[in-house]
Length: 223
Ligand code: DX5
Ligand code: ZN
Image (tube, rainbow, N blue to C red; front, side):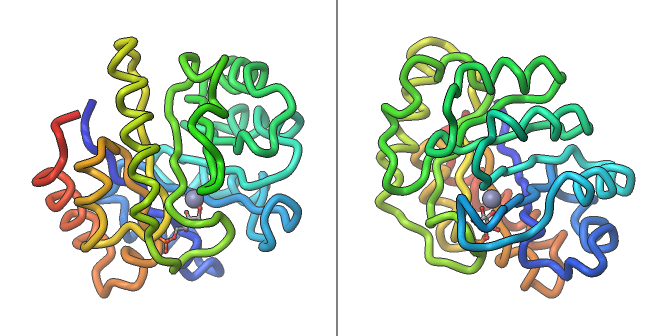
């Protein structure tokens, strides 16, 4: 399982989304799209119509991070639209095991996210079915917040969980990932890195993605 960079477009210029994503296409592995509904988080971004449009304009696989209420109802549609990966929050889910099945039935990878206050044990009962676990390293809702290093315990738990059962589960971190913090997350066992403001505030976003990849490679534990 290699290291994967999934820049978030939350802090890009959303009036020209296709052009902004094109700036990272040469060096990113995925593009991370933050869907927020003003209910699960106090911010409103974009929904299915925008994701569908973006899918027609990028060659990168789309990693949809759903920060929305009622993912049981809404998550599978993102997979049907063609997203490569769909992540729902366990805090919002009524029947997480069923959501995982429904997402997988569309052909997308299924992932579950846990907020900073949520224990790893919230994944009990369906964790082994996941393709990816997202350990949030900020409170979901906004870009540009500080990385919470105290979440590394959960990253380690996620990595050991995957290794102990020999499961091919990716471990993603999202929030405050930059040139200083990516090494901390890689060392703890993350292999998928979301970075929003660090990438889109850089003069050359593609070069920053390449730089972050190098930093993660140098400190990763070889997942
Ligand atoms: C926050 C989002 C993140 C956000 C990360 O709720 O899930 O994906 O864009 O932005 P940075 O990298 O600036 O913390
Ligand atoms: Zn995100």
